[in-house]
Amino acid sequence: MTESDDFPDLAAHFPADGHYWREFESTTIQDAALLSLDIEPRAILELRQLAQADRAFDFLTGALEAEEPLLHLGQQHAEFERRHDVISNAVSCKTLPITGEQEKGTPKEIRLVDFVTWASAKQWPMPTWLSKLGVAPSQPKAQPGRENQQAKTQERYRRWQQEADRLKNSRPTLSKHDIAKIISNSSIGDEASDHTIRKHINI
Image (cartoon, rainbow, N blue to C red; front, side, top):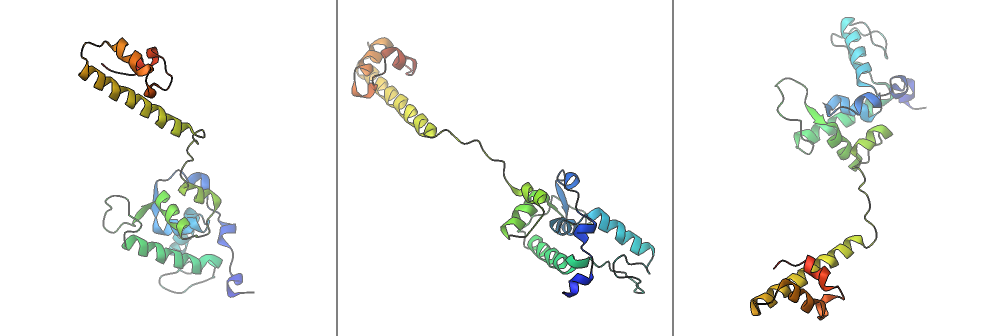
């Protein structure tokens, strides 16, 4: 049994409400650290307010006579402090940008999606609902060879137009119909009809 086993598991007592937080665009550094540990920030805020109202009260560690009571975060306390420090350092280094202009004295806020992407890159264990916020929506897969076929078609049209321009410049009396017939019978016609070629050239 480790020393931390003497403290309660706050993620079990106060699990984060993913349905509530996934709608948020930004959050404070403290709340981001708590959410990454699957702890509900609003519950911790309420406990801190209770501790401030009664300086002798501490939910987890019992009575405190200190002037500024500190709420111990149970088994997650050390990891919370570590994550909070690392996040703060990333914000200071501008690896994690803060959201817009913030008033002096107010807690810095970071975009939740930016935080999750950054924390995922560090392979921090996080609740599933939070990890999903940093995953880009999957794009529909193109059909095999479809993009390649489209490129070939565009190249065919380009060759037809290039040949049509050359023929018109060298023989101005040729009509669009005549030019399409010539291209259709040439090696670059790709067995397309003169009607098809006529639709894809501009004369």
